[in-house]
Image (cartoon, rainbow, N blue to C red; front, side, top):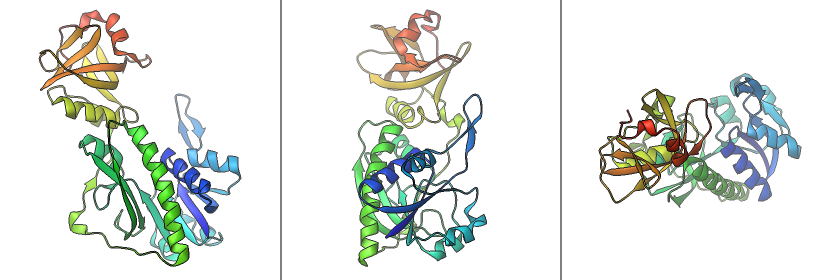
Length: 302
């Protein structure tokens, strides 16, 4: 079976790698066009494009799929498989050949762009991967395969990696079912659908008047990609990693040095800042930051 792969992100790349490891015949890759990135705004290829080029798979960079339907129809493939592509696919594409999607949630829960971040933010203990048929409405297609995955204390990027590996394995299984004629698709219960929004930089602001678990979940979900921060006198401080610190009382938002640890009080306890980053600085250990900023002790994060 000849597979056309559509993907752009790191999640996509890991899914593609696992599919190829499982022997899937990927005949082409469609990905997003190169975009400027970094301080110098140099043009950067997607991770999928870089990887596909190194192993000799044909790569197509289409700004909008709907503008390239005839080119796509000229590609010799049997099934299209999508994983974090970044574009809404037009009906003409979906009607041409069967299109499957690898979605990192237990649909119909968490339809939309940020299912992994939302699962961590909400403190979910279980997430998973769904392989479904792509439909016109976002993430609403019939389900072919679904598997649960236990969330422990992973940060976003670690959880993304684990679910991408699972997704690649499941995609390979799904393609075998399709090729053998044994694929059974089950409609989603739309009455149980929940939708997740895109996340902005403003969503990364931390409020230490909240409970410890809620604060740590936000740091786990957003610090690596969106960024989490608090406002101190004189500027903002990015927070990289943190954990709950037991055994003493501190007011919400108050900053302390407790046994050489950088502590900020929360509603129901204290948070130890493990890594942080000042403006124009680099991410360092929280205790190292505190050593050079004793002036913030006893003050309050906003």
